[in-house]
Every structure is written in C-alpha cells, then in structure tokens.
Image (cartoon, rainbow, N blue to C red; front, side, top):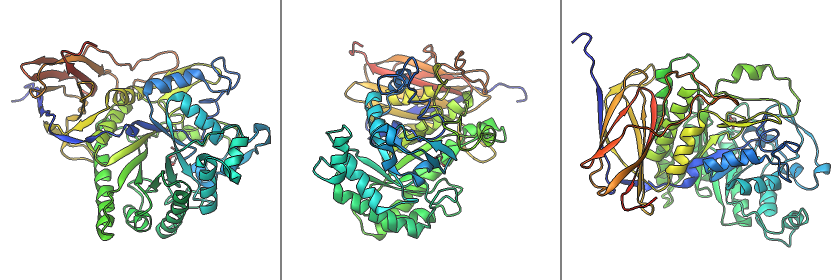
Length: 510
Ligand code: AHR
C-alpha cells in the first residue's frame, strides 16, 4: 500500500554444531611497507616525546597493541620488488641511501629487518616477511633466511650475531614476491616466469629452514586481465612448495554510490570462491593430498588520497603518501570484509589490513605530534579482540536488495564466533542498507544459560563523517538494544550500522 512503512526483518539460527573452522588469529594481521610515513614518522620517529630508546613511538605501539595484531607483513608491497635487504642491516651510519623505485622516494634504510623484528616484538606481533622476486631471486632469498633464521656458524648467521642478534629471529611466514603480475611492479613477470622462479626460491629457502611457511603470489586484484589464469599457471609450478596463495583487493567509492560501495563484500565472496576453486583444480590435477590455504595479505579501502598523491614531489624522504582519511561508510565496508573472512575461516587463514600506520591505515600520526584512530580502527579492533575461537555457520534468512554491481545483497551481513574455552559467543552483524532499519531475531536456544554481556554499536547519521587528530566523531558505544529472552535475541539494527553482540555463559563471573 502506498506510503505504508514496512519494517524489514531478518532471522538467523546459531548452533554450536554448525562449525566452519577454528579461526586462525593471523586473519587479523596487518602490513607495514616502507612507503610514505608508515615507517618514518609512523612507527619510528627518534626525537618524538613518545620515542623509546630505539626511536619507536610508544603511542603508536600502544594503539597497535589495542588492535591485538598477530602478524605484520613487511617490508612491502611494491617496494620489496627492488629492495636490497642487505641495505637495512648493520651499523646505521654505514647504510646506503637509495632511490626507492616503487614510490619514487629516498629510502634512508635507518630501519631494516632487525629493527622491524624488534618493533614487532614490542607490538606483540609476528613478522610476515616478503622477499624480492622482482630484481633479485634465489640467491638473495636463501641469504636472507640464513641471516634471519639460521642459528650461527655460517657467514650470514654470524653476521646477524655480529649485528647484536645472537638468537635467530625464526621468521615463519614468507611471501614469495609481491604482485608480480602487475605492470607497475619492478621486475614484473609472466605467470610462467614467476611460477618457476618462486618455486625454486621457495625450495632453496625450505632447504635452509624446513619449518617455514610460504605464500605464492596471486593476482593483484580481480580486474587483472590475467586473473584467474595467473593463479592456475603459477600454482602449477609452486603448488608443491607453498602453503598459501595470496589475494589482494582494495575498494573505493569513486562514483559516490554508497549503497553499492557498502555491498562490496559480495565481490570479495566471488574472489575467494574463484581462487579456492582454482587452487582445488590444481590440487586435483596434481593428485595432491595438500589443500592450499588463502592469505588475503592486502585488503582495505583505498581511493581518498589518489589525487593528493599526484602532487607529491619525487625523491623526498617519507612524504605523506596514500594518507586516506576514512569515513563512516569505509568503516562499514571494513566490518563487512572481516565478516567475509570469518565466513571463510576454513580457507582464509591469514589476512593483512593494508596498511597499519599513516599509509591507508587505521592509525594516523602527526609528525612530532599525536597518534589517533581512524573510523576503520573500530571494526578491525572489534573483530580482532572478540573474534577468536571457532567460526560458526549461521543460517540466515534476510531481506535482500540490488545495487549497481550486485544483486540479492542481504541486508544482514553476519559472522558468528564461539569461544568454547571462554564460554563466549560473539555475533558480528552489519545492516548494509543505508535507508532501512532492520529487525533481527536470532535463535540461540542451543546456548542455554547464556546472557548478553554487551552490545557494541558503531553508527552515525552521516556516512561521510570522519575522525581527526583532535575530534573523534565516529566512535562505538555500548548501548545497543539487543535483548535475550527464551532462547531468542531481538535487536534493531539501525540503517547502515555495525554491531557486536557478545554473549557469555551466565555462570561466568567476568
Ligand atoms: O598497499 C599499497 C600497495 O598496494 C602495495 O605496495 C602493493 O602491493 C599494492 O598494489
């Protein structure tokens, strides 16, 4: 009937028995590249009032610790494809300044492998190391792993000891190059060239340290003309030597269509399912017993800074590159991306929000000034802190809508995490519709004696609202309206809003 107001309603059922998989905590990873002010002015700023004895900013470390980031990819990104890792070790005064070709800046090499490992320890993270398969190859690959992971008694391991690091760093996860399909990459390769090189470099690295895990480089994004042939051809060569294939994807709301933008999780679903299918096809072809896992080691929103970056003078040190200022709708999409990873916890074992500080990042700093949280910090923190345990498959019945690029987008985007040890159940939920509120009923009758611990909400009446160093406009509150009665949760999710409903067994005391 014309003018009639219809409340949109969704239902879902959660049960302990519907398990997808144990969540690998590395799905809450992030990324630091030598790019812009990520390292210099971000992590590292000797002379800053918050700098520690190594020059690392303690205010930044504190914000990273609150995010509880289990793994950080380093040192690139595009930068790694022309990087000489040897430039970043040894006495700082002897380290060369170089032209850094990917981002056309001056790299001072004040921070290198050892310093980054120290920083990661302080932040509570492991390192995911990327090697240069653009300008270099097998020899540099076997040398860096001998330097970082071999105990001592050889040229490179003894050099590490001489540099003050008696114990090996034991870096476990290694990326075999970065976006090697991209024409922008220094040393771009065909799929055949990359597949052969990566497989031989990986083989040599495993001979040095058999305990490592290796990531084969997938397509740079779904728009690449070689996607997904790249995956099929490269994995034909690397399948037996690697454990993961990488996926990268960035989103932007360039034509200002917020409804379409917030629905971009649909594209991610397609991407994950395509790469999974190709990996399983190669598995079948090889009669392999091994199932390849996915490392979504670059993902985020990235577009706000594109014009500003064109104005940046080349060959300067740490210019403000890729400094996206995120708004509320970006935070919603970030929440949806994290939900998507949890729904695929059986295959997506690692993921890195790109990046962590200043460069397309949840954490921003002012040179010699404050460190502050962007809008996207919050869904990332919620997922990382509360999303540990088993991912459960929720049965969802939601109304749907269409957008420019997607059909049948569910209003309710949701993932559920059960932490058996802590006796906690967490529902992450997004109302993806930008005009309609959504009433949700959740059957949790299998969780007898559970009660709602808190209902966290990120909402705002302006999709374009941003945070700044002096004002946090987009910040979560804990006054959500979820109620639990007779085994059913009832909640109203206001239009375009992010929710974390946390339940715990009522006998739990805190
Ligand atoms: O994260 C920024 C850049 O995006 C990375 O250097 C590259 O790998 C990707 O294209």
